[in-house]
Length: 215
Image: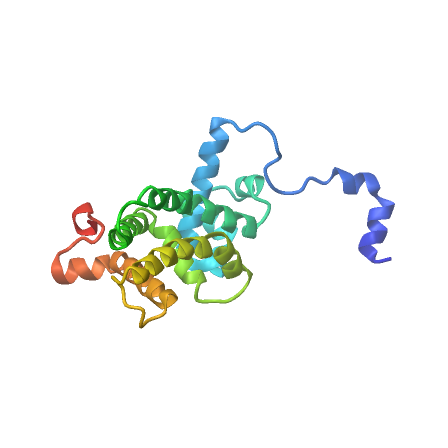
């Protein structure tokens, strides 16, 4: 028996009385929703700039004037907060894209792909923090990237892969390059177009976030 086990056996009431971190289950008030959203916005911004390792709960609290105990009240640890921030940032984006594409079944493959590109660029412009965070996390292999891939990247790439393969079958995109390679080129170009906003403004005076440029 370890010292920890011994202490648990000696103090069963004390062990039972301990309350784990994280919001207790029950009804959710409007104040809870508002507070939780503020915490997630702050966490998403911090993780997108400083990464997971640099985005401590103390730093999130300090940079965005959020109480650390309040963060722990809603989220038991940094990993839970990180995942919740990703979920908050992405929202129902994947489902929205899947639904839109499903409604375009009568449209030819090339125009479906063009529509996806325009919509995906708009989504990146609307949610810059979460996409910056995804790009940052994609540089390092590990459980966080595995989680991201399983929950978001794989479903997203599956949508684009289907569009590319349809276009290849119809002959509007050549089969000389693997479909997965074309998918990565498309996705990378979409993100680069939005992330180059400052450079494009400085060199050409063009705002890539504007609706006119995205369309």
